[in-house]
Length: 258
Image (cartoon, rainbow, N blue to C red; front, side, top):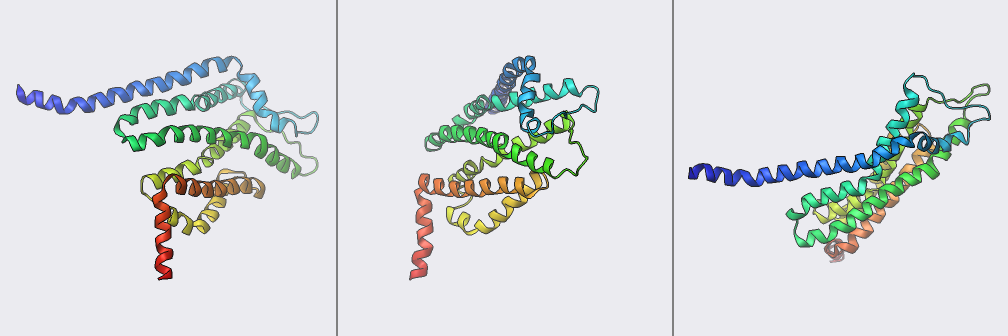
């Protein structure tokens, strides 16, 4: 009897964590649904807004096309689902924070709220940059490269997949400073080490640009340069919030001088 109680006593904390995780996940899904359902009623209008960067550049008289019967229905619904995920991101991050907060030290907890806020703003900034700057530039370049006599009329599903890929790529790329600060805060790397690998990061940024953007130098450049600049911003912020890293950088210089 007491043995069972002892076992139950050991299992209870794990079960409590699992139940709480289930509740948090349900709340995240419900939060997305609260945003998704209203968006379905205006999904076509939202798709029109998303298509504006391309439609404004197409030759007069040309439009997008639907190569599949169900595309006119599923493309806007897919867009509504993606936007529901993006818009509900602050709620998702808050539920995640509420789940992990009890296991953090107070010194760690004070960094979480700023990191959550900054990560959300950076993610939205990346999407805004992709929509207002990257898409018009890329589409202008690609349409301008079309041979004479070729009408550019993309499929609505293909266009949506292309745009969402860019949104996610730029949204995540703009999270670079947050990732840098977290790595420094957890002791995985020092700012001195991050400075030493600048050249590799610069090259890697262009490799990522080649992978996640169309095969043109313009879009690759427009992803790689912000990523590298945000990398430098992450190093600067890490030195500011973690003074011990500045001491670690100063020690090698003192040794070299000696």
